[in-house]
Amino acid sequence: MHVLLLGGTTEARRLAELLDAGSPGLRVTSSLAGRVAAPRRPPGQVRVGGFGGVDGLARWLREHDVDALIDATHPFAETISFNAAHAAALTHTPLLALRRPGWVPVEGDDWLPAGSLEEAAELLPTLGSRVFLTTGRTGLAAFADLDELWFLVRTVDPPGAPHPRSMEVLLERGPFRLDRERELLRRFRIDVLVTKDSGGAGTEPKLVAAREAGVPVVVVRRPPVPEGVPVAAEPAQALAWLAGHTDGEVGQGS
Ligand SMILES: NC(=O)c1ccc[n+]([C@@H]2O[C@H](COP(=O)([O-])OP(=O)(O)OC[C@H]3O[C@@H](n4cnc5c(N)ncnc54)[C@H](OP(=O)(O)O)[C@@H]3O)[C@@H](O)[C@H]2O)c1
Image (cartoon, rainbow, N blue to C red; front, top):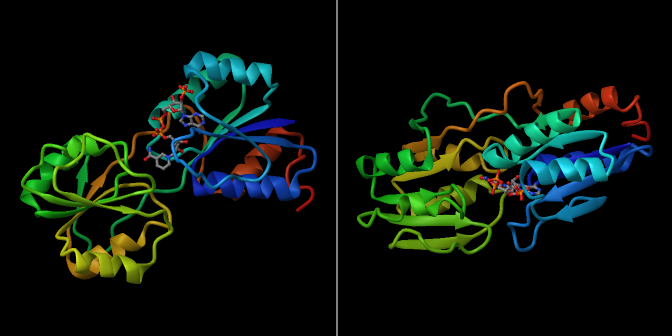
């Protein structure tokens, strides 16, 4: 049995590890987009780079005899998830989306929802002047015209233009610790935080630090999972789904 695992997330790597450790009858190929210069590679077979849209992915599924497709990409990787849904339908390949749940505000949080990065940028001037921007390297253009604001931008790889005129870049990869997040807010006198609703424990401490410091958080809402695609919230659920599509070959060695 051959499973294609669309990755680029902690959960995708974790699922690849679980399958690698406990499913002798199963062949897994993890697919990475190739955005990050030095990605953390999952165990097993790995391919890197785009497929060439829906048709390219459908061709890949056929040519490599893929029996099941798991879309474990980031909740904001909208295009590849759309492509996966369409290519799976074209090729009659069972598809599961593995999506970590979004964050939920608790008492003391001051969250403002935004429908997009552009909407988040519109909100910012009313909220603060020293922004901690954690929405990633590729969406900086949305904030490029906010000349009155100062930005602390945290990304894995250096961002390119267009980007805010006044900014400092922190090149760091999660998970992040609470004490470090508290220190960043203090040291850079941050008065507003911007994040995608990525979910997950690895990047959650910034939300706790913001709550403690009374810093408002602009939370960009996630796009929906394509209609009709079943969703697993964690790798163990994806294993159970796979077992149902692979005659129980999953997890026998674990
Ligand atoms: N968006 C985020 O905030 C975010 C955050 C952390 C990690 N990531 C990870 O970074 C990758 C790219 O994210 P994105 O938002 O740029 O994606 P995207 O906008 O949904 O996808 C753009 C194109 O990149 C290619 N692609 C994306 N994910 C791929 C994968 N796993 N394997 C092979 N090709 C892939 C596809 O190219 P073709 O059409 O040529 O197939 C896709 O059409 C994803 O794997 C995602 O899990 C994204």
